[in-house]
Image 1 (cartoon, rainbow, N blue to C red):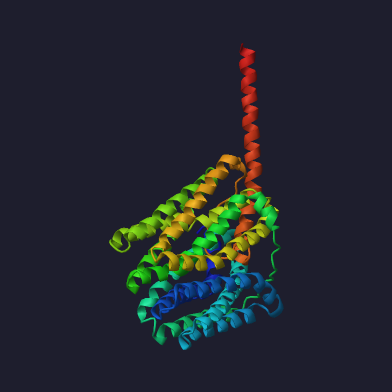
Image 2: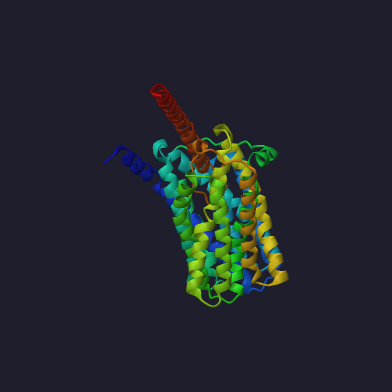
Length: 450
């Protein structure tokens, strides 16, 4: 067995219990998001009210991602994880006990804060347990688990009616079960520090496409992942059809992460961002056109939507890193998440207002318009600014709806890109210098021959 394979196997043995805990959190996350959306529609909450309490989750998550490191520093990882898991278990049960949208608003905000704390604490351990030489492969395993178990969570909603207690209790059990592998570990907890922020104005001036793109991704991600269930339910789809379409969307996006990244690493990343934005606009419009008449064609369109749409945030992050010094990347990615997080809070509210004003069919139209606008903006940036030279580009790293640059594992992804740039760039420069010297020698030989 190769040394790298032994290292990966050793790391996987170290982190397998913790990966199980994170997988259970993702199942719970997927199940509760779908369950709450379906229950809200069944209880005939107004579309605007649904948008409000869906937005509150992102408000809580953004706050939690920002302040969780400070809390961990004060009370430690085990207490943080236990406290946040207990809070999450309680909040989901409140959605069954009380059918009051104002109670749901508060519970969604608290739940978002708690889930951010859970992921920050869990990823701290995961990052510490993974051996440095195989952390990139560990990240790939981690991202695969994120997608697969989120899709599984969507489908568990078919186990019972959204009005029954079973599913709410199941979410609570899953979150509580995720506690066990983390709290039973005997490994020393790692040190953790709150990342510094890159000045917002400076980030906007450095990479306007990334700043605007992060805002666009916050809007589109939050709309799709919260109001998508509401839209599909309101146009009359049965729960199994809803969960199937959402699962196809997630799994197709998981498969496209690395191919899309490899494509963007080979040339001008802005062109790929532009192309994926326009294709996303076309794909979600196709979903809206066929979802009520031909489920098979709609499934093909939503798979295409996942393929084109889900790699976009990571690509925007990679383009920002291309324009920064390696020492600036972690701080800048944290600031970029602020753009993403604030617009995520706005997304469900904006979508709910549009659906209330223009009807349910405005959901895919709104998403298509947002993607089209990002594509147009990318075209404009291509025409008014120079491309980043290929030798100066970093490496694409897959990212999901997570606070990139805030949680420790994903900070490591950024640092991996830094090391890659620091190692590759000098080699590229030496190769370029050698080629230039060869060209000069060849020209001198031709002149001498004449």
